Length: 68
Image (cartoon, rainbow, N blue to C red):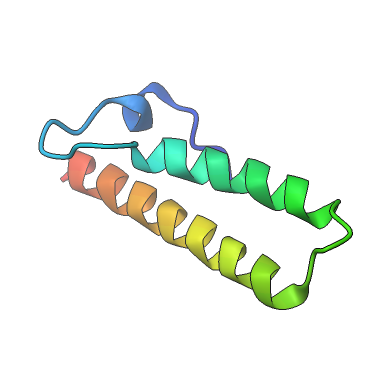
């Protein structure tokens, strides 16, 4: 998924902290890094992927709200 459009990079004024897109990008990087680690196991990798997927859902939900 590519969520790099300028629409998704706009800051939501009602939230504090990282944007959904920032969380997604950081988690994607963490997954790529973790997969290369000797300590990588499927349970922990699955948790990271679930968190990344949650961020993606939130991005898509925000994009849908902006279209309505």
